[in-house]
Amino acid sequence: MQLIGTAVLDLVLYLLAALGLLLRLIRTGPDLLREHRGFAISATLAAVFIHSVLLYSLLATPRGLDLGYFNALALVGWLMALIGLALFLKPAFENLGLVMFPLAGVSVLLAEVFPHDVLLLQERGWPLELHIATSMVGYSLLGVAALQACALYVQERRLRRGKAGGALSGLPPLQEMEQFLFQLIGAGFVLLTLSLLTGLIFVQNFMTQHLAHKAILSGLAWAVFAVLLWGRWKFGWRGRTAIRWTLSGFGTLLLAYFGSKLVLELILGRHW
Image (tube, rainbow, N blue to C red; front, side, top):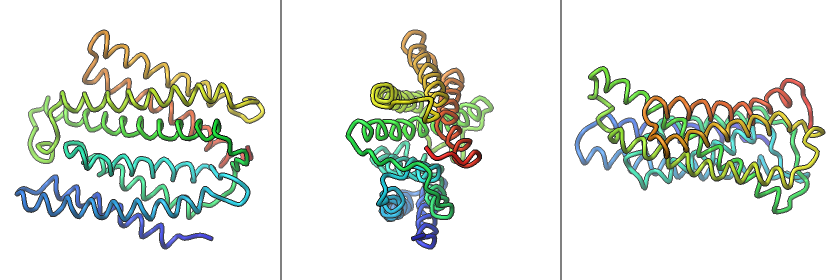
């Protein structure tokens, strides 16, 4: 049963949460900041709860676990919303929700508007569930890292041009932004590594399931992030170098999973 109206409500709540963060970012005065922050947290909690209910109805089917294209997108959106909710405990970086929350709302709305059963996993053993969990959480963390890299790029560019005022005054210093970026990348890299290992061990018949290209691109993304972390440790890479490598790695990872699913499921119409 489609719950498009509920998904629209969820999107509205996510947009209100982002609006609360935006008002907090552009307004001044401690009372206003507390007011808008509380509003954003409340809207986010409500949105994540509704998203959870909708996501469960989308994924859990009588025939198995449905991880078709838009359902997988909604799952990643939900995970990113949870990360955004957790960032309220780290106020300096909670403004990433300005982008993450609307994306999360759009993801679940798309899943409700375009339902299609493509990937139905009937084998629900812990190895497969571990592979799925590490993959999705890893993608989400590295997706947040990509957003952080974009924010870092904008901040650095405006600082170079001597335009440090406005909304940027609410952002942490560059050094702190970079430190958080590499924390996200480190955590996402560990989960990506676990995902690749569990995939190699537990997933069989790569060619039959059309997974070879996904494995190759995921391995390439893993290599990009590995080089980035090594360059940070060995040479202290930062700034635009770190930004370019981060976006390149995430772009490759995005192509590996959602790019391949887009072609196989939505264009070729193949059922895995």
